[in-house]
Length: 299
Image (cartoon, rainbow, N blue to C red; front, side, top):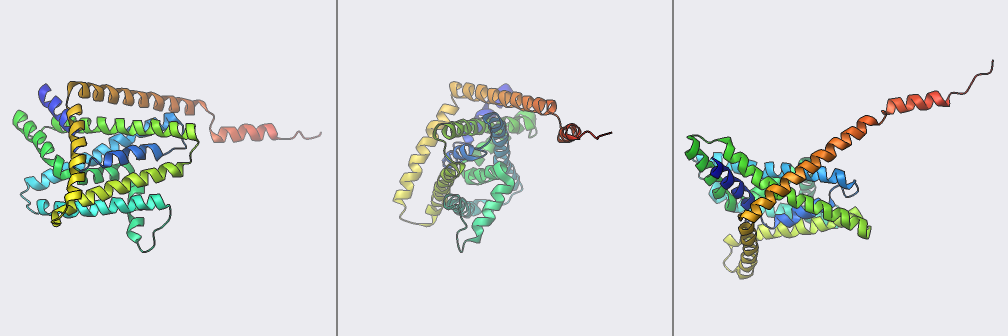
C-alpha cells in the first residue's frame, strides 16, 4: 500500500508538467503574482494555498469524469479531444487578450463570457481548463493509478486517487506561492500597479491558449513544422521537469515544501482570526464613540 501511495503521489506531481498543458504553468505562476496584489503578504500566502487546492481539485475532477465516461464504454471522447483542445485554447487566448487590452474587445462577446466564468469560478475554473488541456497526456497516468488501486484492493480505493490529488496539489501550491512571493516583492521593489501584473498574466495566458490551440490544431493540417518544433521544445522542458519531480529529491522537496506552505498558511490564518477576535466590533466601537461624544447637559 505504501508503494501504491508513493506511486500515485509521484504520478499526480508528474501529471501537472505534461506536454499538453505545460504552457499553463507559467500562466498559473503569473496569476499568483497578480491576484490580490494589493493585500498583505500573509493574506496572499493563505489565499495562494487555498487557490492551489482549488485548482488541483478542478484538475483531477476532469480525469475522474473522463475515466467514468471511458469506463461506461463511450467511444466519442477520443475524437472529441482535438476539438475540446482547440476550443479551450482559443478561449484562453481570448481571455488573455482581454486582460492585456484592459477593455472590452469589439465584436467578441465571448470574451466577456469567458471573463465572467473565470471571475466566478476562479482557481477551480482554471483547474478545469488545465485538466481539459492535459487530458490527452495525463488521462493514461490517472487511469494507471485507478487500475493499480483496483488491483491492490479489489475495488477502486480512494487512497490512490487521494494520493494522486496530493501530488498535483503539491506542485500547484508551490507554483502559486512562488508567484505570490515574487509578485509581492515586485510590488514593493518597483511600486508597480496591479494592472501591470494583470497584463503580464494576460500575456502568458494568451500565449498558453495559443499554444494549446496550435498543439491540437496541427492534427488537421499537413505542414506544421514550426508548430511541431515548438511542441517538441515544450515537451522537452516538461520531460525534464517530470524527471526532476519523480526523483527522490523532487518528492522530498514537494512533500516538505507543501507541508511547510500549508502549515504556514494555517498559522497565518489562525493569527488573523485571533487578531479579528481581539478587535472591538463595529457596534461596540460606535457605542463607545457615541457615549464619549455626548455633551453634558446644563442643570
